[in-house]
Length: 47
Image 1 (cartoon, rainbow, N blue to C red):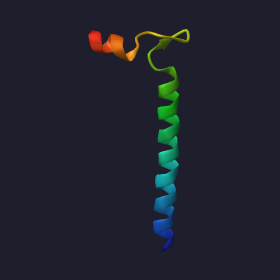
Image 2 (spheres, one colour; image 1 turned 60 degrees about the vertical axis):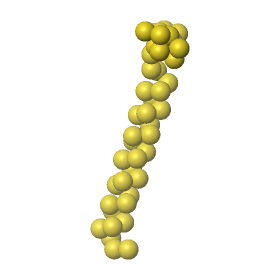
Image 3 (cartoon, rainbow, N blue to C red; image 1 turned 180 degrees about the vertical axis):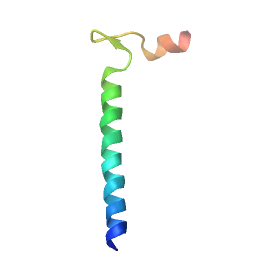
């Protein structure tokens, strides 16, 4: 592999890690108010 390819792969991996961190953060605080879920899956389906 040449240096440019290695740099591109490194950048892709860095972006992937950033995306993963963001998704985990959103997953932890989604649909919650003061730690309590606003709706669970079945309530959303009913609405």
